Length: 61
Image: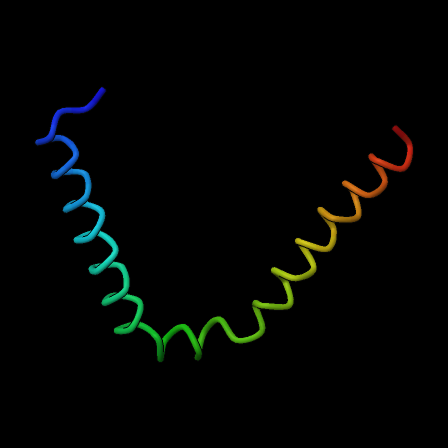
């Protein structure tokens, strides 16, 4: 399926990518707290709405 070189590259790429993403998130954490305050409620409302749609679908199936 995959050669050894491809697997090594994939693993190393994933580790490097995750490290860079985590570093950038930590770097921008102050800005996120300042500009995106209260967005957790929007996320919870969206998840609740999707759950409601799924519940209605399975009730009337």
